[in-house]
Length: 315
Length: 280
Image (cartoon, rainbow over all chains, first blue to last red; front, side, top):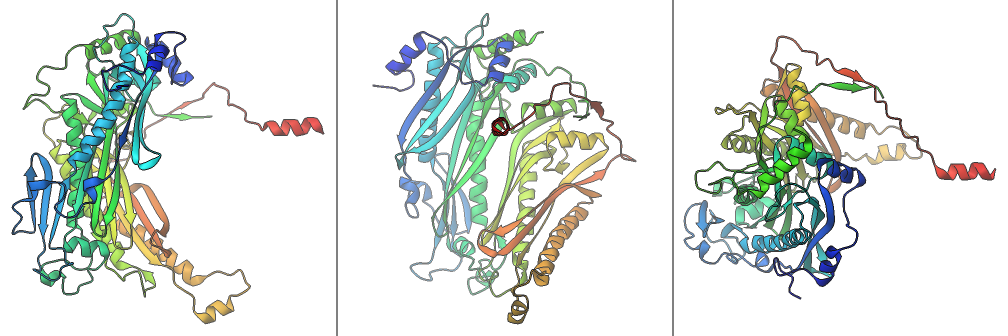
């Protein structure tokens, strides 16, 4: 069974969506609110994608995963590089050769393959959900819930997306139904404020940090002022861990840039930014950020709003 | 226009092609915001609008050994916390200025302390006065949009994040003290003093941070305390709030209206109690 976006739905889904009673994932309150807005639930829609998921290149040693992007390493302690548009930055040890274990070089680089895998899994799940909505002749999907979780073993993950397809009679049906994480009163307020939901958008950014000697010492707490300290061009005692700070900042910046690339001139509403970190080894990290929210488009100007009235409940 | 008409208009807008040139170079870029629709509307009513999701993050190292062979405060850890907060706030401010905002609201503050580093993560939404072109940076605040609107209406203005921390290693009793206190429920003065002092130091540092930004007071202070993840004997105290100052000559009352909800309060009872009453 080929179940890729646009290739058709599973047989059972086609039968389920073809007739009988409609289904809805909305709470009763949200259901009532949707009806009040003129949105009629037409079916519970869902999409899934199971993917092989491993860290492959993320666990590789120094220099792995970004190919020739690291060429040109040389003088200077920190130099930003751009390789095929991805984030790459390098650090060099200030001490010279010390021992075979000494971390002579360090690098931060974007794990584009991981970002692309995540985008593929999430994109397949959400587009399949939207395909089901299309099958139902819906105008959009409200109350979207999405998740990524491990299946069976840690190397298999499932992306899932579900929501309630709604039809808006008397309105032109969009070629691609809109989708939003919002439903009920929050969606009503969004529309009343002049924003039309366009689509749920999400992105993952991933940055791998291979620590050089100074970062390694700092993360191990070995910066109490011995020979590799300030006198040797490194750092001593309490101080900023520059390489990690750059990696953390890059991960967030990349997440925002990736989402912006999907927005055009629209707005990302109700964004949630989540960060996670994986310690690959001592002094080596992989940092991921997921940024998701509802892409909304302004379709009318804000109605002038009076100042809100403060109230005290006497309940 | 009724809500149903507005919904139809919104769906029509989605069905029509996106703004021409929306993806073209030089076109205005999309904005990002983690505010809820309620907060967006409330800010709008007060003449503000979200501009972008902004962040600041800083890791500072703590040398090995500072947690051992010591009692009382771990000065290095407190210094690392202060350095990391200042660095993260600076980044947040730069991020805000780059996006054209004049302040950051609803800053979520993440604090992680491990044996070898402290990390501070700040995430918030940059805001500016509606339609304003020229921006002068004014504030960073962990207040919500609702609190910001209420605060400014009362004549006060946020200035920045005020923060202070203290990390203390619970002192051990001497063998003589231990022996003397056996079999009694008595105060452990060394612990009381150490923890009391650490709390006060964290608050004092937060206050100093507020004074440095010329704040008259600090609102919405959150005092976090607990064991450090790296050692059960290390207790951390972190105090964070928003430094504010009065912009008007006097405090203005917001004069809230009193409302009485007419809906019945739901009475909660335990079904089991009815059963037992019936069986008696």
